[in-house]
Amino acid sequence: MKKTALAHANIALVKYWGKRDAALNLPAVGSISMTLEALSTHTSVDFRDDLPGDMLILNGRPAAVKQEQRVGAFLDLFRREAGITAAAEVVSENNFPTGAGLASSASGFAALALAAGAAAGLPLSPTRLSELARRGSGSAARSIYGGFVEMKAGERSDGTDAVAVQLQNAAYWPLAMLILITSEQEKELGSTEGMNRTAQTSPYYPAWIASSVSDLVAMREAIAGKDFQRLGEIAEFSCFKMHGLALSADPAILYWNDLSVTLIHEVRRLRRQGYGAYVTMDAGPQVKVICLPEDAPKLQQQLGQIEGIQRILPTAIGGDARLIND
Ligand code: PMV
Image (cartoon, rainbow, N blue to C red; front, side, top):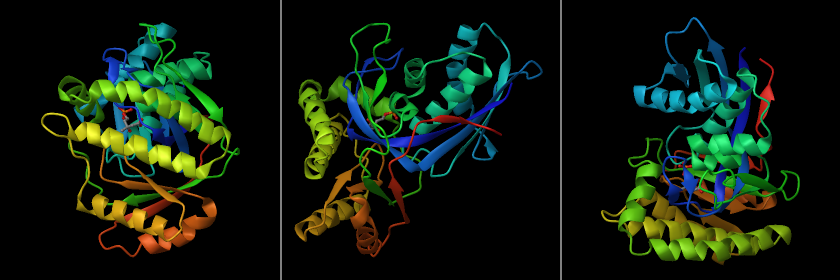
């Protein structure tokens, strides 16, 4: 039966970078994210006996073989659990640029997990869905939930404790984010390759793992106390620490472009003028600005004047991944 799901992207406030197990995609560190209302993936899955193999239509076009294989391997997890062998037709649409450091794998695999589980007739709890979504992409485990979400690194070798939990729902604290698109090109180095290279070559990697624990504690406290300045400071610290870590890999990994650097300086300048605005960035050149909703229009107006920005996506905090009626 065909089932359709919608999941929102999320942006980590405390970053995940590094895996403790490649096969099960287990993270080496925990992470905390904010789910994003304006960025979503809409995916339908239909297991059908008449298909010669899995088919993936991504943003209106047949997907590349590599992407189709990644999705096929992910669907095998659901087929095995449901005891079915049928191939699936998967149709997926992002309402934002794919593969440019905008967490398309997070919303993509969360929506796919939810739709595939329902289409295969599996009764899956949110925890189990989060565990399965993680197999597609680490950050996808967090996109099962709305609001503020913590992904546990877990300790078990089978990964059953490497799942996300919701810290607070979307209504708890209405923060905003401005996503400054500096380039719509696909990123050069995927997060898995970037993480592997970092773990294998950076002398800073052990310090990154050790120091992530106190970032998680501090971020939980900032969220519990609705302390915006603290949240912004920890988010910037975790982000720049992750990018410094990536730069310390051999060869160095640099996800930023010229405009990313200009925008980081601009956000700092705005902060000196009294604005509450903090930067976070992922495995791509886009700059995300964490702010309060009342400041978002003015910040958008100021940042929008900077030459070269392709566009700005303002967003509020989004809700849980959900099944939708076709
Ligand atoms: O889930 P992946 O493999 O796309 O990795 C996500 C890595 C970062 O976006 C850079 C950080 C994070 O925690 O989302």
